[in-house]
Length: 284
Figure: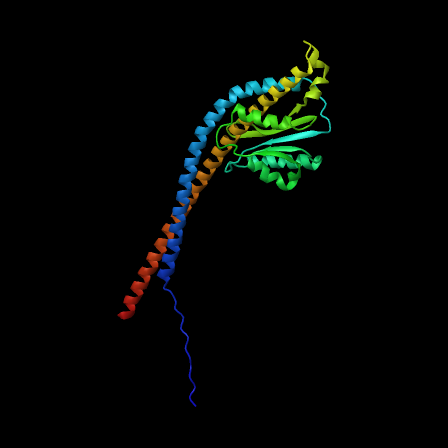
C-alpha cells in the first residue's frame, strides 16, 4: 500500500514587503503625531488669549477680594467645630496638575479631620473627591470654566453657602502667582454669628445683627468672586504651559519618527538592491 505524503507550504512574505509594512506604520504614526502637534499648538494660542483676559479681570477682583477678607485676616475669629469647605475648580481638563493638586489638598485635610460638609464648584474636583468624601457633598456646581465667571456666579455660590449652618467656611482655590506657578490657597470666612461675637467689630461704630449679616453676605460674595478669578488665571496659565510642553514633545517625537522613517526606507532600498544584484549574479 502506497503511503501518501502531505507537504505543507508556508507563504513567506519577501523582506521588502515587511519593510514596506514597517514604513507604512511609521508614516501613519508620523501623520498622527503631526496632527496632535497642530491641535496642541492651536490650544496653546487659544489659552494664551484667554489667559490675557483672565489676568486682566483678576486685577480688580483681587482688590475687592483682599479688601473684603482684610477684616477676617486682621482679627481672630473662632473656627468652631462645624466647618464647611468649598472647593473651587472647573469642568475642563488638559491643564496640567492643577485639579489633582486641589484633590490632594482636600484628601490630606480629610485624612487629618473628616470633612462633613462640602460644596464643590466644577466637575473636575467633584470627580476627584467623590470616592473620598462624596457623602459630605451638600451641593455641586457645573458648567464652570467654559466662559469667564461673573459676580452673579459668585452670588449664586454664596447664597448656597449661606443656606447651610456653619461656624466657618473655608474656601479653597488655586491662587495665581505668575505665568509658570500657582499655589493652593484656603481662605477661612467666619459665619455671621462669629463676626457678631467679636468685640473688634464694634470698635468704630455701633452695628446691629442686620448690618453684620449684610456685610458678611457681601464680603463672602467678593471673596468667592476673587477666588473664581484666581482659579481662572491659574488654570489658563497652566493649560498654556501644558500645551506648550505637549507641542514641544510632539515636535521631538516627529523628528525621531522622521529619522526612523528615513533609516528604515534606506534599509529597504539597500536590501532590494542587494537582492537584485544577487539574482543577476546567480543568472550568470
